[in-house]
Amino acid sequence: MNLSTKQHFQKAEREGYAIGQFNVSTADQIKAIMKVAVKLKSPVIFGTSEGERDFLGVREAVKLCEAYEEETGLPIILNADHTKSADKVEEALKAGYNSIHFDGSELDYEENIKQTKYVVQMCARFSPDISVEGELGHLAGVSKIIKEKVEIKPEYYTDPAQAADFVARTGVDRMAIIIGNSHGISIDEPKLDIERLAQSYTLLKGKAVIVLHGGSGIPDDQIQASIQNGIRKINVNTELRAAFHDTLKKVLDETDETTPYKYLVSAMDAMGNVVDNKIMLFGSANKA
Image (tube, rainbow, N blue to C red):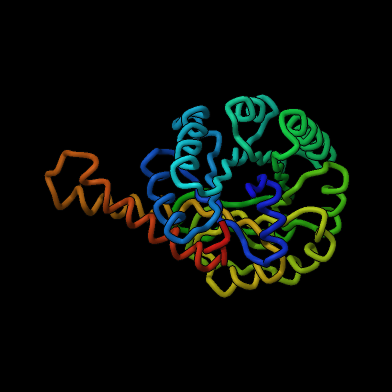
C-alpha cells in the first residue's frame, strides 16, 4: 500500500527512526541522492528552499521527482523548505509539492501562529495528505562552512510548552524546534539540549512529529540521542554542498575534461557517500 506523506512520518514515529531531508538545487544532485536511496531502500525527502526553487524551478522539481518515483517505486517527499509567505506556499502547492515547511520563526509568536494556521488550512484544501511543518525559535547560521563561532543564545531555543501550544493552535503535522542546532558547519561542535528535546517529545508525541534543522556537522552520538528522543526528520544541506563542491573543484583542477557527465560523476558520488552515511545513521534504510 502506498503511504501518504503524513503516513510516512507516522511510520517513522511508530518504528523510531528519522527520515533524511536532503536539500537540492540541481538535477544531478537529485540523481545522486536517488541512487543511494534506491540502494538502501529508504524513503527520501528532497528539500528546496525558496532560492533553490527559483534556480531549479518548482514544476521542474516536481516532474523530476515524479519521474524517479515511477522509475524506482521509491516514495519521495518533496518539501518546500523555509517558505516565508502564503504566496510561495501556494506556488509550490499548485506545482505539486506534497510537503510544506512554513517558516514564520522571524515573526512574533501570535503572528507566527496566525500565518502558520492559514497555511495549514490552505494545504488541507489542496489535499488532506499534505504534511505541514511549522517552526518556533531562532535558527542561527547560514548553509555553508562558517569559519567562526556561531552564537546560539538561550533565547533562541524553543520552549517545549510553547511548542505544544503552537501545535494545538495551528494544526501543523511537524514541529521544527531549536535545541542548539544551527544552519551550516561552524568551527564549534554543536551541543544539542537533549533534555529540552525530551520535554518537547513528551508534550508533542501523538500530536506532531519533531524536526531537526541544521543536521550537518552534528556528531553521530548526538544525532542518535535526538532520534531516541523523538526526532523524526533531519535536514542535511551544507555537508552535501561541501562534498560536491570540494570534489568538483579537485577534479576540475586536475583535468581538462569539458564533458559535464564525465567530470560531475566524482562530485555526485562524494555527495552520495554523505547521503549513504546519513541514511544509515538515521535508521531509515529498508523503510521504504
